[in-house]
Image (cartoon, rainbow, N blue to C red):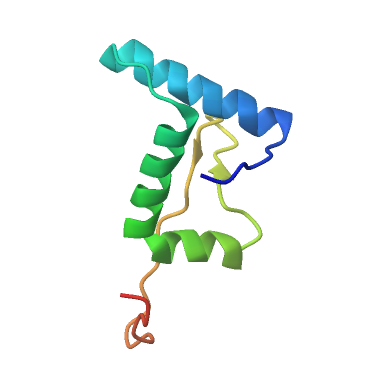
Length: 85
């Protein structure tokens, strides 16, 4: 596997995700395994991933509650077929 450089915030978040998996499952996971799972999941919903790059905001914060979430995917009737299936 190729080496990938991350900024410090991304490294901390990745390690926090790994810790959460370990706490909740009792099973340690490597960074590589976690990233492989995340990519597999993202590939399954690649339209949403592509849409994140089309907009300036990938995540939206609710100003009242502070909750952060991904915006709902909007399907466009009659949109182009996906050629990467």
